[in-house]
Figure 1 (tube, protein in one colour):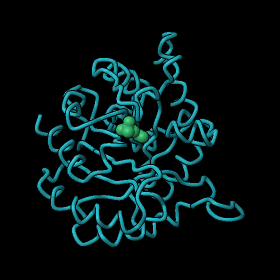
Figure 2 (cartoon, rainbow, N blue to C red):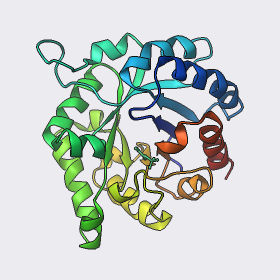
Figure 3 (cartoon, rainbow, N blue to C red):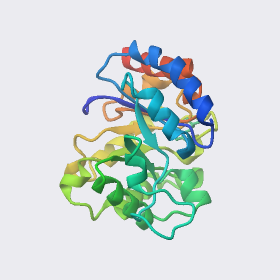
Figure 4 (cartoon, protein in one colour):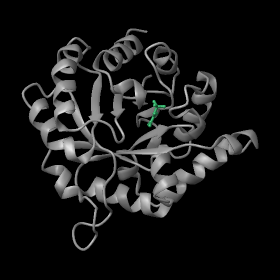
Length: 251
Ligand code: PEP
């Protein structure tokens, strides 16, 4: 953990309505205040809760907001989509893009994810590009090649200045929501391969995601190329998310 300020992002997926989001924030902000201020913390509620989250977070500003997706288009006839300008209204700082659930259920391609990355950067927000291999790909021995191809496919054409503004989250698909976390050495091996892919990635935050818990987070962030976590299930409870971050950064 040595590339800029560590970053922990809670990906709530399709969990919590607006009032549940407010309750979480009331409980979480005092806990987050006790975490060293250089540690960056963000939560990614569903779109419908971004307004109440923004209002509840604004007095302290200790915790940033992230979105779980965005459209690549600026506005127009795209029923059901959300534009970057709509996220900007709520001071959204990060946008998670390319999550494996969206790649699977919405069939998002690397090209589409790349377009969303460019729209996000153009709006002054930070994309968190999620990449990761399935169990079959890992067992065939192609995990690194697969992940690097996802990165090249989405952001290979970005100029260096833009590429240096990314956050990349390595999330092995077989470790997401399964309780089967990837061992730290394998996660580090992948994080290093990502970092070495291009010189613009030398200082970007690379996160691990996949069944990260208070009990195992410290072991990941002790790895030289892992700079924090993208956390699903363990970010839904304020105490568990705070314990995870506090434990990880105390290590
Ligand atoms: C995720 O969805 O990004 C994730 C890492 O989920 P979990 O922590 O529940 O495995």
